[in-house]
Image (cartoon, rainbow, N blue to C red; front, top):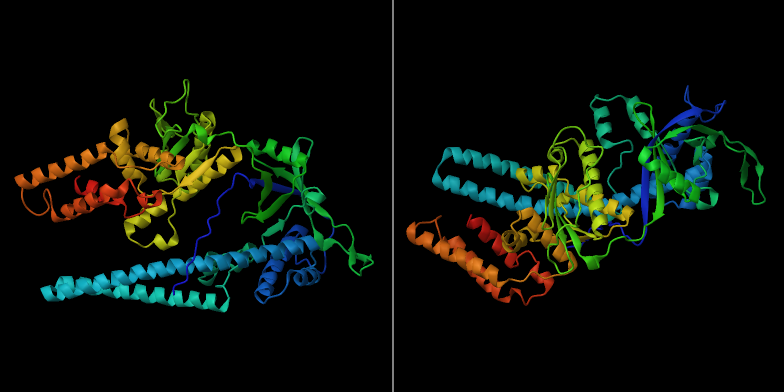
Length: 569
């Protein structure tokens, strides 16, 4: 019996805590005057030594955890082996533990995705075998040669996936995980091919330092952020330079106070006030220090905050959003599921930072409650630029929702790894269309601003909008889909109305007329269209009495309506 697996989707909960992360840059200025003969190497500065020891401790803890060692035992032994204080050592162990747990989760997901890929690859192989048989019967040498090439490639694909699946299933059965490459697998392959040096590889494996926060010890005892004389500073504890000066009553070593490396901390201007407020409140914060290839130190500061109170109310309706490659379609929908005109004096907030060229940010506002925000660069820009533009787009949407006082309704789209390799066209679309990035950015921003966000099933929203709302309100298919999404978030069922039945009847009569005037396969009422209409007639009569989940299922009446729309274009 095939084992059932469920993907764990981590959604941000408005009722719980949220993580507020700030990225900055640190400029170390004051170093300790002495070095450790035991732990330092060559001309390495104390901060570099501390980072190397921490990363080595993390790799060592990873291997020991795979052997079944306990956290307490590793914590005691790690301090002796690497010279780190207890908190640094414990943080390294926890980071190693997270790697192990995440790899186990990824293993289950990878097995599920590989099984789906293998199933489709075998189906394609059967199609290739049939095509080869047809080419041989037709006695066409060119087609036979082409079919043989395709068959050879698909056999190789099936064989490769079967070997991969067997390997993954062995790991699952034995309770192990695939090999983990600290420093990055891609960089290691470049080293093996001679395209990158070993020094670069070593730097990538010893360029991090992490410290957890502690509310009882002023936020973070090992890496302390402070605001002094109009600027932020960061002090990093160099624990390997502390020395033992005795033992306590329980026989534990008592160490001297460890020196610190201090320096200026640069933070983006838009985050400075918030960080200052959080420091004054004494909330704990985690810090990860990363040394880049250029020798600069990047700092990631993560605060855990209580989610703000909601400023939106679902009793007012929803702001429906339909995601597209170049922007978003929005629909302002009231509680009764009807589009509502924009408030008097409403204007779309224009992002201040966008000023590269004219037309970079385009907002087309319709007075009957519909809006399209277009950012052409989303479809072709580089990843960093695209991420920035998605953040700008999310901020604009959340600002609109705040003005309206309505929560956001958006599609819960998911293109997992198991859906890839369907065909070239789908792969290109899925890779260039950042559905998940846009959705996550909007939910994340909404959570921080106290705006409600409700993901809904995306099934048939465009088809429903096309048949029911596009002509009625004189809007585009994207606006109609946004309206259907908002109605689904409110909880409405999409019934087959008399108006829709008349449309289907009109299409049927039109196709019959075409068939009488121009008979022949491929024109008018073809056998394929006849089968579609026959299935449609059976489903239309019972659709309104079905439960909601049945109305939204894949092979519901909306699936046949979509096929009919495509056939009658």
